[in-house]
Length: 353
Ligand SMILES: Cc1ncc(C[n+]2csc(CCOP(=O)(O)OP(=O)(O)O)c2C)c(N)n1
Ligand SMILES: [Mg+2]
Image (cartoon, rainbow, N blue to C red; front, side, top):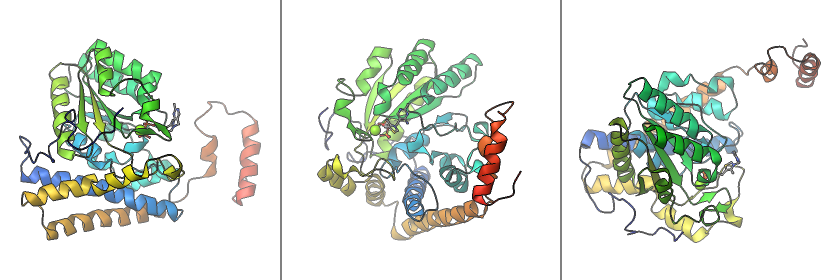
């Protein structure tokens, strides 16, 4: 696949064309900015918390915020979100407390939520396995005569998985109200997208399922919003699923356990950083006279406060009992479990029993 460069005519853009988006007034534009900044702050603080040993391995989503906020803002409250690990914090935009998501990355049981409370499914680590879940939920909503739409987020690598194919095909055949949102950051850990598929684009795969496929600049929050809104409207009107390919270039390590310097194009990363999605939107808002220094400072301070309170709340929760490791797998646990739990307690210095 040829590298995506500025001015690529295939990619939908709004910011670089200095267009306006119908239906987005000043209030909505500022709310979108708040969401972008909240996600950026969550991500940057999480990297620090990881380095400080306060959360576990973390999947960085720096410069993926425009794809997440832009698409999430196009949804109605009744619509369902199916995130992958890359969108771990997208639930913030649905009111899930930041402390809950931090607890998820800490492996704490309070890091799980009831999906029906927020219409946000569990964060999916196995690549692509949530695509059939989203297709099934969307189809179910249609069968019940409900208006809700589902959106499933996944990466370029996920489109090589059987689960992606099964979910996309099922959704198309059943006319399920689903948006398949691919963040094409051009890497699946160290596998480049050119080694992932012979298809010219990810969006081109949509033809094989008989659904529309659209390509959008993944660093342009407004273009992502506009493309997703169209896909959602089509789905809600009975037009079935759409595959959206949002194109970007991964400009951070895959996760905190990765060192991409041995495989990534560092010059390209530098180029991406110069044009990262939050700054790009800020410049757009400033050109339109909507953003000024005071507002920017307020929004950033608010997001930082949210994170400070969240990590404090997460760390204030008592450690879960280690017995949890042995629970919920068997109706009748094997006899060896009792001995193993006792040994674990002895090693950890806790109460025996
Ligand atoms: C079924 C499955 N196979 C392998 C892995 C290991 N794995 C974790 S992330 C990843 C790369 C996924 O790349 P992509 O779909 O492009 O998403 P990105 O991480 O770039 O957002 C792989 C192979 C996994 N989590 N699940
Ligand atoms: Mg990828």
